[in-house]
Length: 420
Image 1 (cartoon, rainbow, N blue to C red):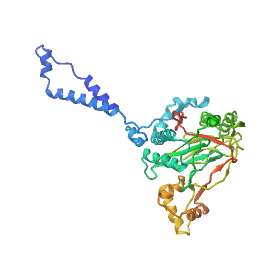
Image 2: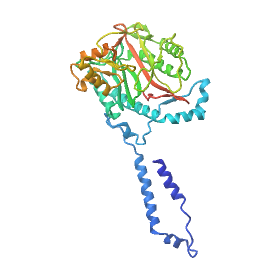
Image 3: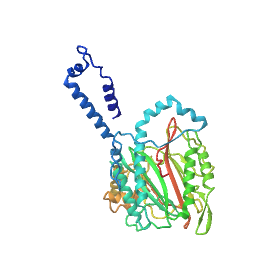
Image 4: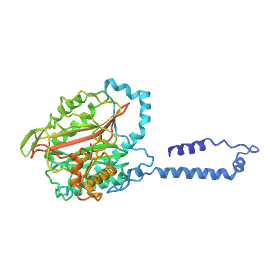
């Protein structure tokens, strides 16, 4: 679009000065062929056309326009840029590193598209959240909005994993199964953790909602701890150093709940993680307490930096009915005896591949009476169940999370928005 404008202006500027005919400038103007006048009119039309094109469509409320239509250039907004520290500062001006980035542009653009969908969906969901909502309705509204805005298309574009909406002492991996009647309450602390992807490039990003301002310090603890983790992350940074910095910030907070003061704790057995293509956990863990592994972060890696603040023990265990499942990334061919299990696996391969799914997603695809087959797939090691992770009953947990990319020249917080 901009090129078109430039060439039009260039044409107008480069028009030759009028030639004198018998020393008469005016007659020179008149003797110019009528074609040229038409050209000028056409050029003017062209100009006004390109101006019209510049008026981008605006998102509706509720959101219904796919983000590709809101960014007709096909270029999606980059996230927040943070420079690397000290030893890596040279990267920001290195021509060689910039060239590496140019080669990766299509991948960056895909993940930025997924992030833009995440920002628009969470903005809408925050505007409609209120006590009394059925958790199932909340999840379905959120998921259907993602499907619309991302132009869902098989494994090329869609939801990256089930909508986590874990409440209170449940820290992660809870979403309602069909028929669940749980209702969101005024005194609940809800972690809303959802993911989007384009071509398997995943944005994993979460925030916490609490209507009662009593919980504000608990939310602030995880939000600031996550921001610290992002700030400390970088190429050649040891994962244990990120964890130590996170814990220090997290545990500087305390929260008073119904007259009792709690020291906020980092949940020591929950971590951030590296992200791969169609692989939500790609092998590296980012601890949120000190004493983690010495492994380093590397150039080009994507990480989900997430922290969990708890008023409980600061330790989770598996509990409650399972809703989240994921096909094992490394699994080869395993012979199955049950025809129903084979059939279910075909559905999983076609619709999710190695992305996580929940029972509601199977119901939506028309699968019925699949629990025995699903158990068979889990027992054979093809599918991994991910039950809810819970701290002690009666405690409260908050979470914030962003996806970051360690670009060759700088760090990009892909999922950053005006909200957090």
